Length: 371
Ligand SMILES: C[S@@+](CC[C@H](N)C(=O)[O-])C[C@H]1O[C@@H](n2cnc3c(N)ncnc32)[C@H](O)[C@@H]1O
Image 1 (cartoon, rainbow, N blue to C red):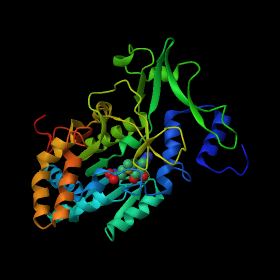
Image 2 (cartoon, rainbow, N blue to C red):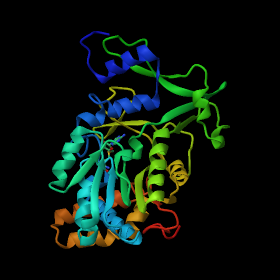
Image 3 (tube, rainbow, N blue to C red):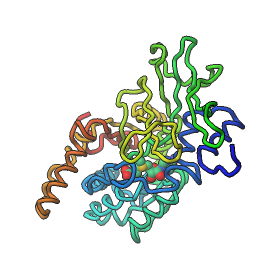
Image 4 (cartoon, protein in one colour):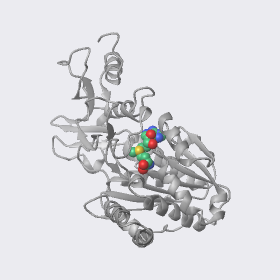
């Protein structure tokens, strides 16, 4: 490796040389969060000119309905004042901005809300500051750092960015997938490849009993990082009144076999090990294990329900009609197209799911009553 090389690939190759192959979780954590080269640390990746678009960036209707859902959930908790309005991974701050604007319909909610954003990226913190103008906001690196107390928590497309580990079934049992430097690659331009751990002990322990008999070649994914955040949310809202909404794409029914690690660059899939730090890396969210971890923490869990059904039950159709009443023909077409993207089954409507967590014994929040 040349001394002048200074990219995340060089940094990872040097680390592998020192410590041996990395877990998928370590690779993903570095690719997204390395303080200097991490994907989210360096840039604003959202929108048409970026790598991907999220629901709040598609339409203001998304954040508005999440905001009104928070107002309703707050009222069901007895309207605690003050309370912490927490968002995990707020991106450009668009969801929070739209949610606060809609929630201003209930001044007591706005007056009681203390906004906390959990965001590790300095670049995105600056973007959130610009979006939220003079709204008082406290930033944190971790949920643990948000003070205790009554909480309304929002996490949209946060859990899919948390690191996963992958374990693969071979004819000798389950072995963790690791990432090594490809020995064919030149030292000054390292490339990476998947290998299996040598002894099959640490990975094997992570495989859920329900999947142990999966056929040879199967890959199982687990996200201890996601489970730990979910347990923390559960503990938080078990000890003070609270409700959380988690929206993401993933499996509704518990862990399944399948390799879902994916890289997105300029709105297209890219090879997952190429150019670490320059593409978004995500994996399907295992809602059942998030719900289980939150229940272990002491919370009740509801759902997941499909995003399309949830937004429809909250009134996204009438909201779109109201916006269209003052829109130009072009704007009305854009509103219809955004509505379709958010709720249609072949768009985000069924792939994306919504999970609610509440303080124990509070009953189902809005949009989850039928469960
Ligand atoms: C896919 S973006 C979602 C953004 C936003 N919620 C939206 O819907 O537009 C993921 C966000 O989580 C942040 N993030 C990723 N990993 C994080 C971590 N471990 N701790 C805190 N924030 C993290 C990223 O910087 C980014 O703001």
